[in-house]
Image (tube, rainbow, N blue to C red; front, top):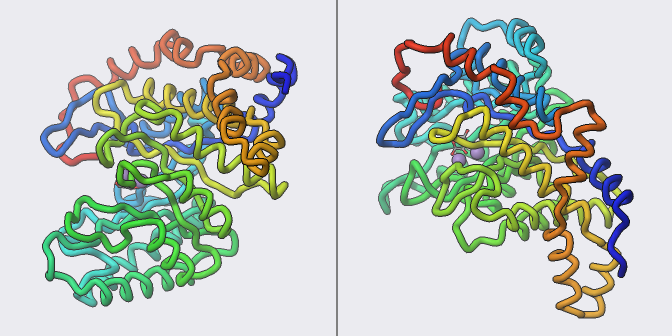
Length: 397
Ligand code: RM4
Ligand code: MN
Ligand code: MN
């Protein structure tokens, strides 16, 4: 089959990019480090600074209208959600998904909703219910809890009982959702628990989401898988079950490394996008998926890395939009393996950057968001303004 003409390629890519929004994590703009140390930058310390920095990424990419917030870090007790909304508006963004924080307080040493102690479970549930209310008041659709719950030594936890407690807690949280809200259940195979985690994989998240209720879906954090795992198959299964709610994008070489999206394996992200586009092509329905970034940048400049991430997401999504699904399906059905695989490879190896630049021009954006950000002087300004502050001690905050 002849390759698409340059103008139809540009059009296809423009159509795809118009529909791609990538949510930024507020915590991606704060100073973070590793378990061993924290490396400071002129990072954001307040929610206002986080909105301001995220606003820069949106300004230069036009792809990131919302910012995911962590309740404890960004909307502490006493904060008025309406003030948070106004603040976001000032920087050209909106509050996005809301993450409760049920892993940081001392009482959560042995878990939250799965904790053996009823009083801790109740405390965690109350915080999650508060988060649902805050999300509603902020106009945020998705509530995205992540649980550090699990155990680190064999025999120390009743895995079945903990599953039951988690299921009940999520069901109660689901009951509090507004009509348009969703509960996204994230899974992670290990860390900080190193023997078992209460929601270790997509199957467990799926069972729990189904039990919680019709507005619950599964959240796939790309870094939360074992190395050999076929993530795009998980995506395909969740799509076919109408249970894929969203992504936390990042990349990893070893485990939950929170590296820049596509920095290690761009073909992996392409294959994920391919499954989504294939589903949409076959069903004629748009997959209702929240794309979010969940990365911790402690070596690269935070705003620059976020721009690099969004550009990468756009390029890989654009490549996936070039897949010739009619040809692919035909080759699959006729069991022409090389031809089928080459449909993927042709799309993946197309240099989409000229078309993406063209799309930016058509939106009145700079062709190179990174260069435009660097020229804007923003980084120099915040470096001056934020210099000399005492560095915070806790990670992510
Ligand atoms: C976890 C998980 C969550 C994130 C926390 C801070 O590994 O990815 O989504 O909110 O880290
Ligand atoms: Mn995550
Ligand atoms: Mn993670």
